[in-house]
Image (cartoon, rainbow, N blue to C red):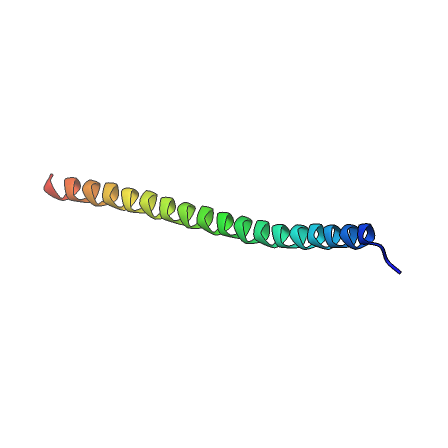
Length: 67
């Protein structure tokens, strides 16, 4: 027969294993979200740089046309 201390130990062990599994899954979700947000911010910055360069080229073309 299993005594109450062993039952308690088994319960704590199962709870610890379950907690570790869930924390691992949550960490995977969070790290994926951070990666995606970082990628989006990088794409947004690239768009901003491209728009700035296009505006500079348009101003330069306009200035050449006025001469």
